[in-house]
Amino acid sequence: MTVGDVAAEAGVKIPEAQRALSALAYDAGADIAVSADGELLYRFDPGFRGKVASKSLRIRAEPAVAMAVRGSLYLARVSFGLALLLSTVVTTMAVFALATASSKDDDR
View 1 (cartoon, helix red, strand yellow):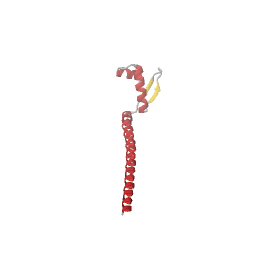
View 2 (view 1 turned 120 degrees about the vertical axis):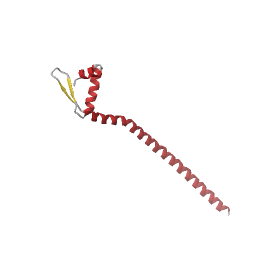
View 3 (view 1 turned 45 degrees about the vertical axis):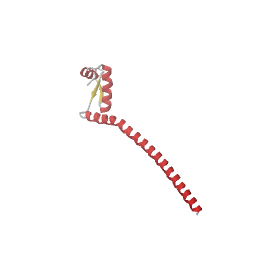
View 4 (view 1 turned 30 degrees about the horizontal axis):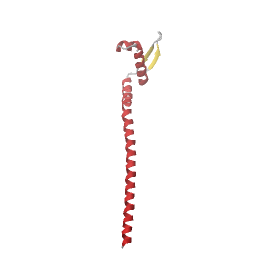
């Protein structure tokens, strides 16, 4: 298959077909050869659609995974901050309770 074949079949301009075919060849691991006329010939394996589909799924999943990681890290920071704040409040209350209890014992 050549760039001209793809451009004619898809109804797009040659440069656009060249970019798309090069990207597809890279993703699918196609063989590229040069014809006697000097044109690039792209040869795809029979199962190239499966390769492209798996890469496409991975590419589509990357933003969602990145967002989930960012969300998890944010949640971990917020949880740590809340735990730190809560432990400070509990410690302060415990010190206050002990100070109050010891001052009541001194009054007796």
